[in-house]
Image (cartoon, rainbow over all chains, first blue to last red; front, side, top):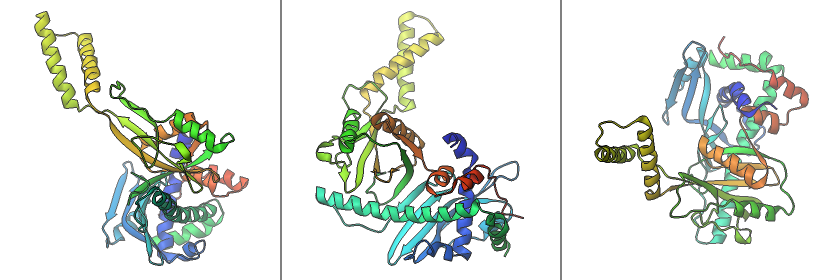
Length: 174
Length: 204
């Protein structure tokens, strides 16, 4: 393995490509999401997308936010060569909902809100709350892990250039 | 931001290496030997150490209280004294004026100014209480994975250093490249391809 700081910077584009691919999957290929997650109901874009375009001399950043914000500006930015650097997601299983933001360069999760859990009054309640919260956090992490695995398997295969990227382009220009 | 908060941030790690047997005792020793220690006359600007999830201001790891289910749950505490620059400026000006009056001179040398600043800082640091910052973590020992409940760079760096010192284990931060290489189940051939990848241009 490469030095951590070198690999963090050199391969940060993988995180941006993952989020760009994920947006495409959410819009056009939901089957990819339900595959590894048998019980999943829906995954939607949440209330924030950040895109970045560094194909010119200066880095251009585009932020789209708001619960019902139109994403046309984001598509336009993709056409100009931008990639998604931050994506807020809304994940729903039955009547339980998760909201969180993924940062492309680190794949860190931020603003993660999980379904409500019971209150606490004693040490025993604390143990129960920890176990319950850990389970709920793990659901969001498992979703991201499965999607990232799906992405990276495709990214290192011949299909990336011959099938996947042409489909993403087709979506961007549709 | 705490583990039990309604809104959290998570940085994920892979734990490299195994804890010496007996595991719980080794972890208990690592926690107690590196637990945060606070004293009222602390002259350091920053103090870092472990604390317990349920009593962060009175660390207590007795009775394997850090073991919840199959998880090891505890917290990193960073106590930091931050002196507002305006306070430093005010006390520096007062001390400089006093020295000038005592010496009858009009100017202070650069070295004198530096000494006054150091003196002011050392006096103020004793008077200002430190602000505690608590960051929870959950460590799945069997899975060699750890979630740290903060995305702050400085907090993550403190965690990596203290964890290594306490348990003699390395934390590998999970980001796109390390996730691809360590947790995505790629074959050796796929890892070679991964190392040679370059950015895709989605726009034609």
